[in-house]
Length: 124
Image 1 (cartoon, one colour):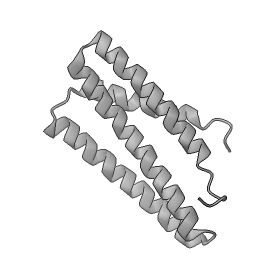
Image 2: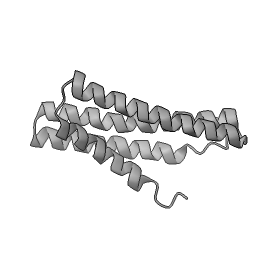
Image 3: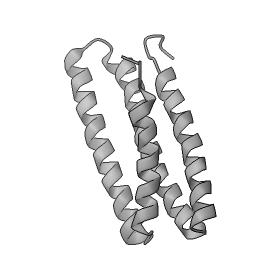
Image 4: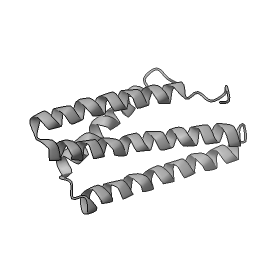
């Protein structure tokens, strides 16, 4: 892998998200039951898929766009659009197709998003 690509921070974020997801699912399993825990797992997986997609685009931009500012900007916009589309589609599948309860699914998603919010402190 190219030495200009700094994937260590996003890899650490993924580790935090997986640990937080395990804690959230076990808490939901203990407190609510297996159906709610599965819904929470699915909601957390939505956030993790978003992070994986962001990591994939980061590596792709560093290897393909390199120092071309216009190409990097296009890749950034494409990453944003794809993350929104994937998130919306996964929520639709979770609510409409799999018929998960909204509260545990949203709880899983929001708790894992907190790792994203607090995972990048002092990284600027």
